[in-house]
Length: 378
Image 1 (cartoon, helix red, strand yellow):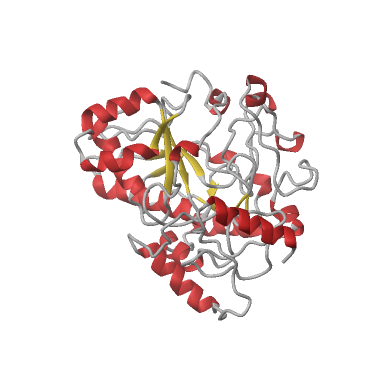
Image 2: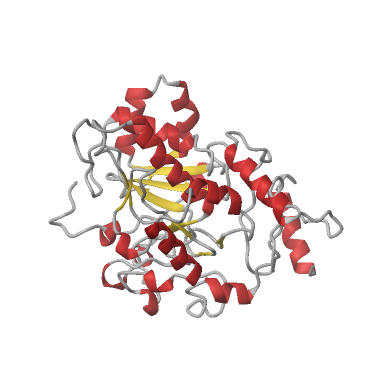
């Protein structure tokens, strides 16, 4: 390890009070077999309260540092991320000047309208799928995929971290696609866009939530109640383009952010297949509690408009869970008609970020990512 890498770790330890779980791995430590890793990851996902460290894991880095394992999780199997890894997985590697991470835009109006690199100004990102991702989709289509949650429990973390850089300028390795099925009530708002790829914790969470919706609102009375999902990330992450090549989101680059429509649960009524402003307290408070308590991904923050946050507080403010969860529900302009959910690298208690106020998403013109005016309703 170079002197610069050692210095970086010392700085991280100083900033986190010496409690950062991404401590340097001992070179002489015991080897962990793939079988043991599978068993450990399965146990972590199946536990409501997995044995995670007291402090949240450090964000993975890809430059001037090796990606080392976190406490309580198996070590990465295979080569550690290097520039060649970034060149393989980051679709903006060349546009970034052959750097792993791109530049993060500022907060000015001009920067809010940053454009994606020319080769990524497109309506669909399906061409960026790997052969493995295409095979996964084929298996889903012909019914041979098997149980998604069981598969995620077996495969999670075997190849190391999946999200690199930050949610605003990063990329996604081995992204998994969210698949609507008979087991869940999920509808992908724009499946032809191929922006429904995420990390294993993200996809595990969404699959689990879809099944919870199906269980809570059973057929036939509530067969029309769906979990409508918007963008997550492109197959390999990176910038998502809106209209005119402009950047549609300033996050959604690492498979850790997802847009979800408000839940509409009424007997005999079909859920709207678009983002809308119909925010019914009872089903949506149920959904928020399930979201934060899911066993697959720790939820860092939920972005929502302040008017809806006040509406929730007035209706459920005496619920003990509101006191525990409300600090992780943050106002962000542009979220009057959907949830924006950000997750961490693995399972854990709500708010795996120590300070949710630091989890920001610069407001961008999200109308660039909505359907045509004649089909989009508010």
